[in-house]
Amino acid sequence: MAIKLPIYMDHHATTPVDPRVVETMLPYFDEKFGNAASRNHAFGWAAEEAVENARGQIALLINATPKEIIFTSGATESNNLAIKGVAWMYREKGNHIITQVTEHKAVLDTCKHLEKEGCEVTYLPVEKDGRISLDDLRRAITPKTILISIMYANNEIGVIQPIEEIGKIAKEKGVFFHSDGVQAIGKIPVDVQRDNIDLLSLTAHKLYGPKGVGALYVRRRNPRVQLAALIDGGGHERGMRSGTLNVPGIVGFGKACELCRLEMPEESERLRGLRDRLKDNLFSELDELYINGSVVHRLPHNLNCSFAFVEGESLLMGINDVAVSSGSACTSATLEPSYVLKALGVGEDLAHTSIRFGLGRFNTAEEVDYVTNRVVETVRRLRDLSPLYEMAKEGVDLSKMNWKVS
Amino acid sequence: MAYSDKVIDHYNHPRNVGSLPKNDPSVGTGLVGAPECGDVMKLQMKINPESQVIEEAKFKTFGCGSAIASSSLATEWVKGKTVEEALSIKNTDIVRELSLPPVKIHCSVLAEDAIKAAIGDWKKKQGIESPATERAAIHN
Image (tube, rainbow over all chains, first blue to last red):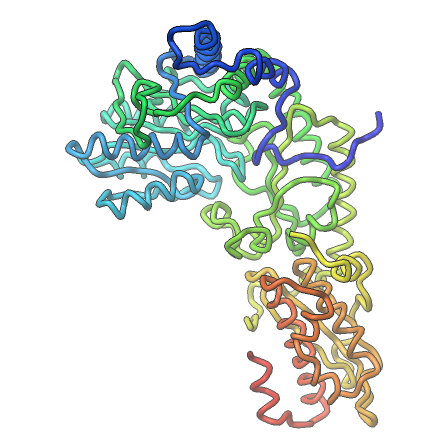
């Protein structure tokens, strides 16, 4: 089969909407366009029924009950609602929040915002493999702690945190546990009961659903979590999130979750196979290649590695028919290399050379092989061009050089 | 972010890639930047001690496409010029030629630094003292 270019391998950023999801959504744009809050006519009833069906499909994927699913505009809003909602609701109880350094900015910036309001936030460090230490977590909990917010899996390095153990600690200490689950849900089994998660952020567009729709799981029993709302209005979503529901988006989100639930066992194994094929092929062809983060505790579709002596943006420029992303400063808005890699203790020199591959549902083995070849050929070409590779091969210790920074 | 055609051309067909013998007294080597900053340029020139004409120039660069293009262009421009002429190349000339966006101006600065550093190294080998003003210009 001929390969269609460009090839998309950046599924941690977003995913295409599955055609089966698109098909399910279509009637809800024109035929069944009703407002789910319209209680007195058939248009409203049809929309409400579709929303409740989707709520059930989403709940089933994470072993929750439908009433515990609150629809939002996406995971950034869900993270804001979970963290600010708890901080504001339980102000009397305490003002201490525990999170960790490799969280998504939607969590880190929300915590920073709360610090300005008088909250105290502990940012746990991560070990070299990208996971937090449970001892650090235990030590950080104080009588003032009201929330622990630790992501399920990281968006850059795909490293999975010890969620079940964190959940146990949180439950034991009577502290709410929020997890940003966007990268993990639909890819690996996430179970809010097994993991003792009280709040879980989800988004549709990372699991082959549409953009602009997300959800927050809010536990109703053992313990019941109450949230202060961010948005006031008509009292939709049990008063936690007012605003007319995005019915077509929600329908698509539900269908996408159903497909993930049914296909996950097979799909995750297939993607793991493709990812390992990519990794093994790259390692057999290239030297000075380093994987960032734990190899074992990692999402099956993620590979993040540093191609030493080749700057990330120049590598992306050379493989311009392949969509991947880099932790290089040159590709970020801040001109700083990835804060996630820095937190793992990856040197800035290697952070500049990192590439993130995110495989997805529609990638094939042929595409993986094509990408491998393009990467290998470009890395070789750029290493021939790299004074650092030349020096390293001559035996110069680059870390001992006295670099003059202009 | 889109690259200019000239940047893409230099990236795809870099001119004068390679190394010259760094212990040759007629070869000046400039190594500027730092791996932690994501840019390192090595620029070498073989300079005729009599005529002070740059007979050969080679580069190797670790950096983004604009850094590669800036150094590739620098080798093209210095070849055939006298040392004095080469020292008059300004980073703004490189910015203009390659249509570099503001976030990539540091790449052109690095290329100018590399030219000055290579000539400085050659002068040192030749026992020619660089005037103080010129040295100051290296660290802008």
